[in-house]
Amino acid sequence: MKIVLHWGAVFAVVGLLAGGGALLAAERQGEAARPNILWLTCEDTGPQLGCYGDRYADTPNLDRLAARGLRYLNAYSNAPVCAPARTTIISGVYPPATGSEHMRSMVDWPRSMVMYPTLLQQAGYYCTNNVKEDYNLEKHGQVWDESSKKAHWKNRPAGKPFFAIFNSTTTHESQIRTRPHKQVHDPAKAPIPTYHPDTPEVRQDWAQYYDKITAMDAEMGLRLQELEEAGLADDTIVFFYGDHGSGMPRGKRWLYDSGLRVPLIVYFPEKFKHLAPKEYRPGETTDRLVSFVDLAPTLLSLVGAEKPQWMHGQAFLGPKEEAPREYVYGFRGRMDERYDLCRSVRDKQYLYIRNYMPHLPYGQHLAYMFQTPTTVVWKRLFDEGQLHPVQARFWQRKPAEELYDTTTDPDQINNLIGSQQHRDVLERMRKAHRDWVFEVRDLGLLPEPEMHVRAAGSTPYEMARDPAKYPLDAVFAAADLASKLEPSATPELIKLIGHADSGVRYWGALGLLMRGEKAVQQGRAALTKALDDSSVCVRIVAAEALAEFGPEADRERPLAVLAAALDDPAPNADAVALNAIDRLGAKAASLQPILKNLSLAPRTPGDRTLGDYRRRMVKYILGQPVLE
Image (tube, rainbow, N blue to C red; front, side):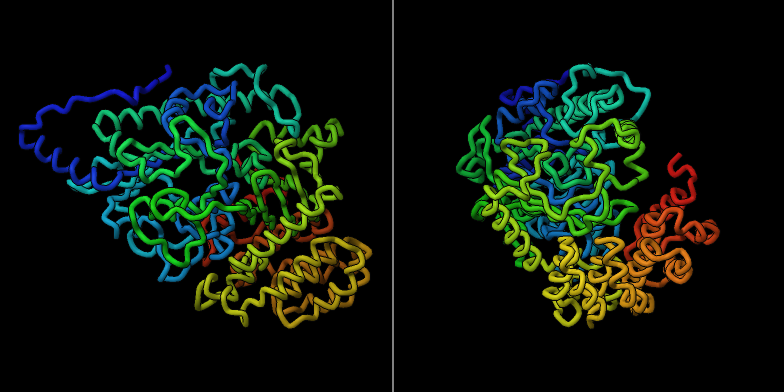
């Protein structure tokens, strides 16, 4: 059943002369001075809504909200997966700056920096979250007035304006594959992106994704109806957005528009239209670039509070609205149990992606992602050689760089990196990426264990701002050289393995591993010496390179280094080692008895669910069922 709201309705207020009515009147008077703010959010949903022109979608309530509000055509999550995306929002800081980019990690950050609800509370707002948090940053003190399934703006003290979040999990990735399911959208009519194979399994997953969006739309309708029936619709600014792109594979977890672009609708009641941007017209759109790092500063602007100097975001609404962005930035770090390092820059036309680990395929085996039927059939068809090149690309190694014209290539399948016609665009986007890395002092260029070791006694954010502890110039130059895969760089990479900084040594060794057998043989002496490096991450990379490309007779020592790394005290070193062991496959078969007896107890710091991720890795390597 569709729930269609009538936003222009006027509701009678009953009992104003009674004592309760007098209290309500006083409360409404207090609210009128400043807006209430309601965030309606959902999970794993791109702009597949009727109001965004999707004819397959059935979203009457959000379409009606959009008809009253402003739709953002260029709204982006900064991360294509939930925990880092929500960490960006709650802090107003890019997670690569705080070391919180990795999926379900946990890091501390300076006590001088707080989550935005604290700042709203200081401005007099009652703040509730219903219900998901999933932050990768430590909470200092009480962040929300209430954060639970019972959290609601109705529970606020009299006279206080509210900020309230209601998050729907109906569209989460896990719901796409839940069976049995009564199909509503016709799978035969489902729009299938170019990169997915057209099979019954893929069509059913896409149709079910749209079914869940329709169900979520009904939930949003009820929330809006509740607000109106309380007589608060005229006092409340409403936002609707998704936390990142579709939960379908190659959407969620990747830096294409399918993973980062989200719907964003903002509605201003008449009395608060002075807080809206100049382009605000009911039912209209804006092409302004905005991203999740901008949400906290925007909230502060709407309530008249100052943005802290340390926030990276820029307000796009309210009296403190800032100049429009030229670029939005994305990042991909560890996704569940698998490591990767990718960054993106997006302007209104082009998407640039920098892959710092191009030796890894896009579609590394993620146990959770492989629960979706589309993932399983897609990989099977690849293994059987039944995919055309665009569909097969997901299971192959990544290029170092990608560049797409999104206006002519909405699925981002035509990489323009070698186009002379786009050379100026490429150089401009490269510069924007590099400038951002240095502006935020991107900690993702350090392996996760290395970051924690260097930050001991402090926080990763503070450590990154100490050039003695994090010589970013040298580390970035090494990462850039290593990952561009130019064969001529091999001699320089060998020299880097002897550098004074372990982060530089790590990239020197990884650069040889990425280039394969010839480079590893050229650097064999340096890699062998690196097996005794003071950094466990350098030791792991050197061991993987020598075990992968060295003679079988010389494998014993590298494998012993990997086995020792499983018990190394550096946080998450065992997760890095397990990834290396898995990539070695049969060449590391002698380590299986060790894996069978490996303790998988959680470790700290930086270990929120990595214990479970380790368990998945070990089971996968041993050929056991991973998720049952």
